[in-house]
Figure 1 (cartoon, rainbow, N blue to C red):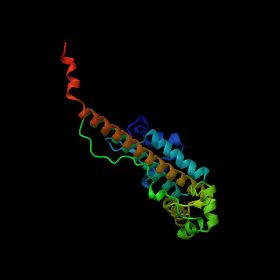
Figure 2: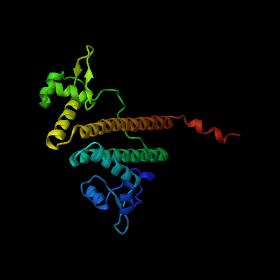
Figure 3: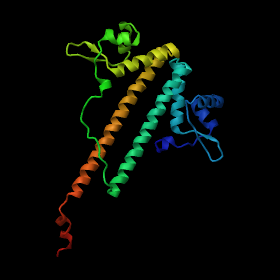
Figure 4: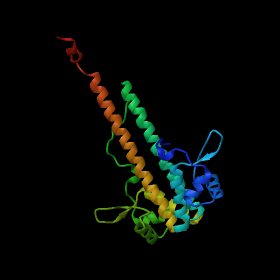
Length: 236
């Protein structure tokens, strides 16, 4: 998890409950459901961070303003926690790379970015095939696109083309609505976070690769410097 001040557990449950205008018992329920993950003091007292407070306010918005049921809220918060964890992993990876650079360790062999599109993101299915694959009416897919729940590509002739990832998202929407009873507002929140999660993961992985490539390039240059380059300081 990220180590910035927003993630530092500081508020006892009574203060946290007051900050979000909820009963302490509600916070305990949300913890049991895995919606929030407060820290603990050495004496096992629950301590909530600013990030926990943000999550609790988001839960209240989802339930009170958007009418999202608890199953939908669970999906939203699971994705929020996943985003937090990815950010934490990225920060840990950057710290590890910086340590490696300081130590001038041998760089491991890395695959260079080749600019290729992930096969799962390649738009290949026309709307009739995509609808058949997910057992939905094509008009439903158009509705979900207008709601920005999915983002199909377009051919040169402006025909909608769906990727494997779009098919996965459509199946997830069907699971949320049919199995969990999540309303459309809740599905919109969940799919927005899914898109954000995909983009964040891709962006962080790209940044890590770029930094690693930069380290590899520097280490290669250091190893290939002529020996005479370091002798000038002894002259004179």
